[in-house]
Length: 369
Ligand code: OSB
Ligand code: MG
Image (tube, rainbow, N blue to C red; front, side, top):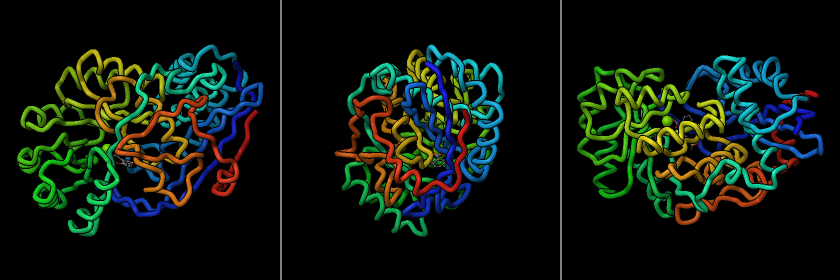
């Protein structure tokens, strides 16, 4: 197959509720939507998870646009593509870093490929699960009471795992109180790199609360200190920010830096790379789950597809569209029933991209052919 046109759109959606992590508060969501058009006019879709500001990692909407326009799109446009794995190889052979930009174009190629093979993206990736388990990520709130109210609402909706964002000063008291009210819920904490080894006693105190895991307590680019921390903690460490590649995963496992890995397709440079990390972790008995980046339905559809692979054994951050957006870009929206999502069986991402909504929320677009 060949890609005859790529359209980039800068889309902006308002979040229904601000989302606060240790690195800042998001009020809305700016992202690049990528449409890759095949010779027969079929479109493949994906979105970049790079944020407006370099707070989670170094990539941004602007750096992604630049890298896509000047480097990645030219590597993809008009070339004969036998399999999306070949595109991934090309992108990695020629360009360093910029994984979220790579994942965005590679994801659109994967969607188009699956559609042209008459398959769902999930089955094209080798996914086997028909439903996936879903957890929810709960941002830092103004009070513990407010957090408890949100947990209660999500519990009623059936979510299977509750992730609370923490930072120094919003940690022990919060977790202690939540555990008093909910002694048995599957609970975890995500620090987004808010701590250092100097906080080791504070982090070790969390061992008393039977957390499923602590996600990325230390620096966004560290796997050494995490190994020291993991040796001290009973609670499993899950790495998010620090794992960008198969090599990072291999080294983290070798060092004992974590017991669990969260895969974000954008962070690791695409679906092909995600699958490689999946297979490595499966061989080593390291459980996986799929992280989220407040994606629109297009990005969520990719997350759902990759989560259908067998070693995604823990509930992922793929909560329902309605928790984030007044209206999503896909039809139907992502819905969660009894804490599960049914993996769509339609072609490609399995959700229809609503072009009217896409137009409505597009700030700027550009076509490449
Ligand atoms: O660390 O997992 C994270 C959102 C933005 C940046 C980083 C993270 C998150 C989330 C939200 O936790 C997950 C979601 O609901 O999409
Ligand atoms: Mg995280």
